[in-house]
Image 1: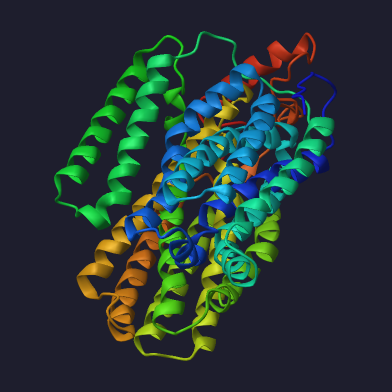
Image 2: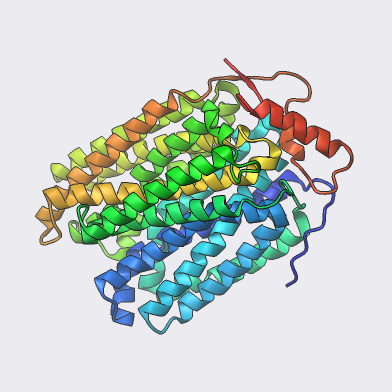
Length: 503
């Protein structure tokens, strides 16, 4: 299939939402779908525990490291073009995963999958934001977040069902026909978008990719190598140095890869920081809950996946409603209240596990946590994307998704250290002790996110008839003589508080 990216009239919002949400679902699902299939993969390929670990981590590592470079590439060659290219790379890598004869090949294919995802997500989120009028962003992002959130907690269910009912290879084969369908729809319906056409900030790209690679490497290796080990200390320190160098360079660069002024916008900063803490809490909980349900409670992979459903269902129903509410009440209430409810549900889950309570009690706790997550996720996405001018939407989306990947790795690493200090996998009782402590830690992360959400903007007030124009037009290639004027106005309005006055 050839990649077409011709400028044209705005695509219908429904088609844009369907195509971008479907791609986000596929990418997010593949990040966690292997969680409940790892033991089957281990038996089939004769993999070691370290090999299994890298089956998960290889995806996250390349995904996080290449997200911002992927966003920059999309801004330069066109976001639709980058989105379609990413889908093709992801489909080919999925086929390679399914055909892998050994764990080394599987890990290499997962690296390529992560690279494809790093092209898809920033481009899809930027395309969707540009196609959505400002006054409808909350509603649309609520639907988008619901679909993505379903993948995060539905991954273990799908992985368990496929591994137990078919074969583990089908968790990757299923991507190929799904992506083929999305490619057909996206090629026909999406309209090209581009960011700036300035010379690429190559040093900024290298520093950003290097810092994220080192930080995520250190976090994912902290459990096996130990926090005080030379490998972990060295990579985390090197990552911090590279990140500081990246920030310093971006502040001085004439054409920065990521305009650092965006971090001075409280909507952008609060949305990203709260997203980091939400994802840290969410991924760590998914990681340990999938094991707790099997090791401590004796469920099969499919049975464990089914028991995630009380967490999954609220994401599908609550996130769209929360998105509509955000259009009226703003991001602050939804982020803070949502993360507080997520934390309260996790405290309840930890207490129920410690008391060896019935699954019904744990299901109620999971549902409360899921409702809270569903409230906060769309508000975070909208807060971040609304703060960026059209020319920087790809970079804003890349930053937001990078922050979430780092948050996921951070949450699992911190919770794993707490688990190791309080329990082990030697017996169901020991696992329960460690699980209780780890889930209490994820609750603390959620509560910290609720505090950062207080700095997000409150209810938005329209400033004039042209306020939402920038949300729908973007910096569309070939949009006509008014496009340049529009971009300039949008960039000015985004410099302090985005496109709205915030009270």
